[in-house]
Amino acid sequence: MRSLRVLLVEDNPDHAELAGRALLREAHVNEVVRVESGQDCLERLANDCKFDLILLDYSLPGIDGLLTLGEINKNGYDMPVIMVTGHGNEEVAAEAIKIGAYDYVVKSGNYLAALPAVVMKTLENHRIKKEHAQLRENIEQNYLDTLEVLISVIEAKDSYTRGHSEGVSKYAFAIAKEMKLSSGEMERIRAAGLLHDIGKIAIDKQILLKNGPLTDEERKVVQTHCECGVKILKPATFLGEILPIVHQHHERFDGKGYPQGLKGDEIDQGARILAVADSFEAMTSARSYRSAMPFEEAVDEIRRHAGGQLDPEVVEAFLTAVKKIK
Ligand SMILES: [Fe+2]
Image: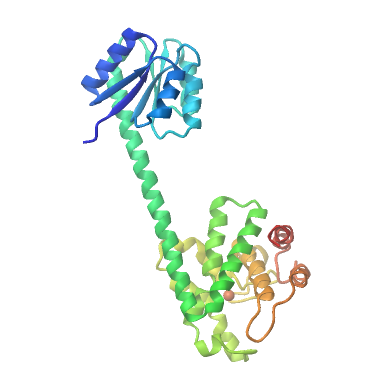
């Protein structure tokens, strides 16, 4: 097992001696390094920050324990701090917890008896916290990898759709940001932008890549991509939140869209945002059978559809957001 090092910040030599001994004897600590002031603590950390825990006395010569704790936080050292306060100084302990101390110990008659248990509990909690952070990071990476795989699948079938999806995702995210939606909601909209047309992989390539206008029959086939997308993504439970957007991104605010003909607020807000982003991206990018519409003309076109095809509140946010993108 790795050796455990504690930095003990204590100006009183007798207290330091006793605390150090208690930690070595009862908290499985291998090394206790003692410094006498907050300033010494910060200098020591600047040269050697490989400690597993800091035991920080509040009452110190020079800068006190709270100020020292603030400086430790500012430097982002990844080690838990336990504040040691004098008797009757409970407000200091509460303040220390508020600004990031893991725990506190009040110097009373038998505090040395309790100290090893507090130190061991803190080390264990810190280990668990780090493990959770690592797991969360792994899950987020797996999620991003999965999105990338799905996007590559779209690209293999239709290289236009990938570029289009990335554009839609970018515009939709900018609108969501302008509307001050939560970070979770912005992420949902960003991911839905990338995957909204995934159902197109189920559509016949002859129809999907046809040069020129579609017949009514062909249009109906293409329109099934919303429902196909839901079927494809449904088994991935972690993508469950984006399914309403994938399903409803061709619904219209005036109820004349597909597949369900939903109207106004019946349509998921993310889908209403995606509808604006989708229209704008499609108008401003060239297709094999038509050239791209100039930027300003496309903005006017979006403005014209506010309250009809498109949600006016979303269009308003788009009109502000698009100025920042241009
Ligand atoms: Fe679509």
